[in-house]
Image (cartoon, rainbow, N blue to C red):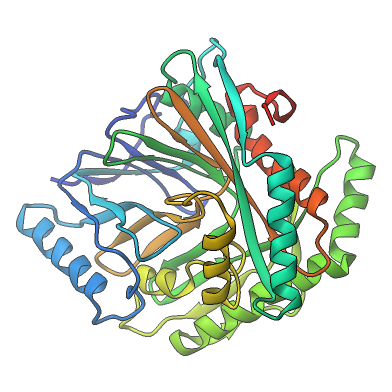
Length: 391
């Protein structure tokens, strides 16, 4: 039977093959065991009477009949919402504060060979192809991404990797998702797609970024320059305008500030806008998440054109990269974050992902370096550097 408790003791370990971990300043949890999986795509998830929402209600009813008083679902949803979800109903849930997680990283460094995919020249050509598409008005913004594959000499210690990630990114939305094929998705996302508690919801999209500096005065100057950057402000406004379009029919008292604020990670400054609204009774966290996902911050504008261009330009399928990770309960509450600054860990390989928003003023080489900076979040966790990866 699921236990919904405020865990009084420090959690110092978890089972990487079985446990879902989600750390947030709002509400953190460790979900253990797997009652059953939900693979239904969320392509119609914004429709309260659609196939996905019907399956979700059926899952909660089944869980309650199995003796779970307050069931939740946890897991990940892919970038392409037409693909199967990686969700499941856990058997036990412990709610806790993120300060109660004290998993110690291993002192043994990861050993492996990192390879960029695609290489620098190919990625820069991808950006030029996107710019050409924008010149012919096929899209106003396209998000392009790249990968780093790390072939490991030994099996990665997933618990230790998560501990290092949490230690280096103490304020991120840190997650560990066990996947059906035995892999894990591990990440430290800075971006909240949606959090719903009762009738109120919050979203905080990020678009526009700049690498931080070690010197505090230089770092502050970089933040100010980002706020005044015409290119980054334009990219951010495209995201906000599209989110407004998505949320307006699904909410009351929608509050979207006219000016973004600065948000920071250990590595990057971001432009962020905190959005707040009231959802109607028929909406739940996944209704809102499905309506928003994928946002222009991970796809582009307009969404369908950008998605088709991504499929044509990128030489790989994103799968869970650029998707969303989180939880939802039968009362409609939940929290979902964007699956960025993350890696997929298998027995002998770790794949890392990062993307950049391409707008008409984008420079191909600068976009390569921006994605490299974003990849450094996970490369630092692995004890590797971008410069050490093969081109």
